[in-house]
Length: 202
Image 1 (spheres, rainbow, N blue to C red):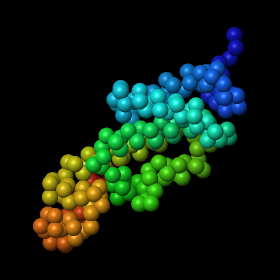
Image 2: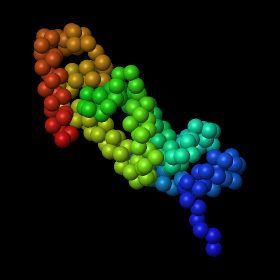
Image 3: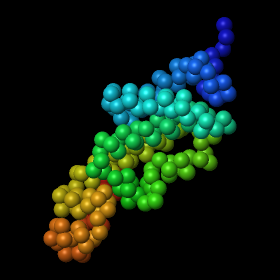
Image 4: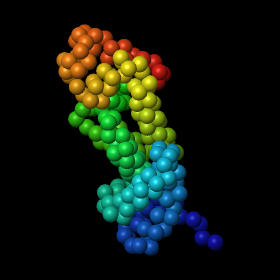
């Protein structure tokens, strides 16, 4: 009885051969784990199937971008994570990933979350297992969702101003005009609101 091939072996075979047979073998191997991973992020059956289909389609169409010195699963799980984030952004357009920066989540105003993740993972990804990768990215998603929940649970006097500043990216002066309060009050409420969110997340 022949030994079952590893993810790495199947990934290299598809990368080198680009045949439907090698793709199908890799597809069958990675699909169950990817589906479980995406479910943990989205918890929506229809969304999971859409994200999974997009991820596995990119396995076929973007294989040229894969670097064989790394694990094929690391590359695929990154694609799945990015696809999941894309779905979340479309579902929650009123929220901005810039809110994550305010809570120490390494997102700059000039880069998307996906680009930052790529930079953060570039040096370490060849040492990461599937379990390591999932744990790191799932933790990031948990913190992001927690930050959004904490903001939405604040008292209106803090929540509305904090959302205008962190999510709407409004200027302090414009927020003061919108809510008809002094500029210093806006700054104080933002400072206090951020403190409450950080406390709630810790």
